[in-house]
Image (cartoon, rainbow, N blue to C red; front, side, top):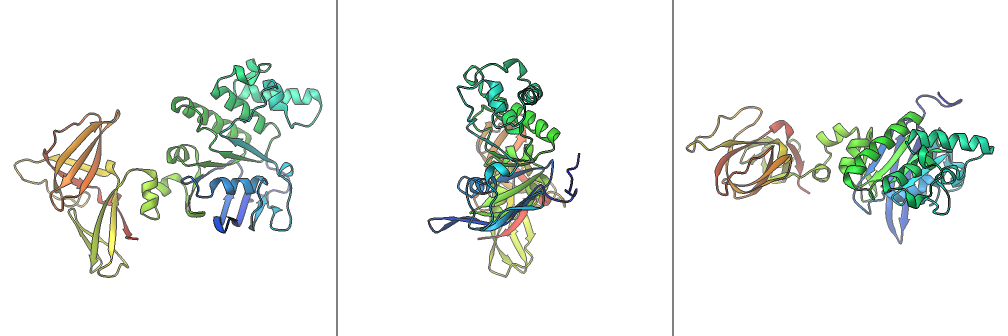
Length: 365
C-alpha cells in the first residue's frame, strides 16, 4: 500500500553530493544515490572505498561534511539540520548480529518496539513465523546456529517496519552454502515488506545475486551505476571489468584509430596515434580449437582471426576447466575456461579465438 503523501516516483532514500573526510583524506567523495521502495541497491567496491562510511551517514551515526539525505522526499540531514538516528525509520543489519545474549529471541525482536504487550507479541510472532523461527521464540541466542541468529537479527531489524534497510556485509560471517540460503530468504522477506534496501558488499557475486541496481565505488566515488546485467556487460573501464571476473588484457598502440593484436585489428575511436589501448576479454569468452597440422580454422566475424598458442597448464576447477596458453604471436599468456573436464597436456599446440562482441577496448591509463 502506498503511504500518504508519497508519490510512486519519490525515492524512499536519496542522497545528494555526500562527502566525508578523515584526517584530510576524502573517504566519501560527492556520492549521489536514489533507492526506490522495494528496490535493492548494492554499494559494491573494495575495502576502504567509502561504502560503510556512506551507510553510517545515512543511518545518522556519522555526520557528513557536505551533502543532503532525504527519506520519502523529506530532508533528514544536511550540514545544519539533522534528524537523530531513531527518527529516520531506518533498519540496520551488520556482519555482527549484535543480539543481546541475556534476552530471549522474542525479547530481542521486540527490543525497540512500541505499543502494548499484546501488540508487541503479535508482531514478534508474525516475523518469527515469516523467518521460520517461531519454535525458538523463548530460546536464547547462544542456543541458535549462525544462520538462525542472522534471521533473528533480520526479524528484529524489520520489527519497527522501517522504510529503509541498511545492510553492511551481513552475510560474510556465514559459510558459503548457508550464506546463499540466508541471502535468498532475507531478500524474499524484504521484498514482501516493500522495504528499500541499501546493501554494502565487496563481493561481486553477492551484488549480482541480490541487487536490482549496483553502484560500483572506488576511492570514495561511484564510478558506475546500473542494473547488474549492464554493469557486467558494459563496464566503464578496465578496473570495473576486472572487479567482476578474471580478465585477459592485450595492450596495443593505436595507428589510424586501429589497434593490432594477435586476433586481428580492433577499432579504437577517439584515441590518438601512438597512444595505447587495452583490449579486455573474460576467460569464458575465449574459444579453443585443435591445431590440425598447422592449419587454422577460418576466421569469422564473430570470432575474428585465430591465434596459435601452446598450453602451459590446465586445471579442473569443478564445473569447468581453466587452461593457460602462451601466444605464439608475442609470448603473452592468456587464460580460457571451458565447461566440464578439458585437460590438454603442456605444450599442446592449439588455436585460440576470442568473441569480438565480448571484447572491451579502453585507453591505457
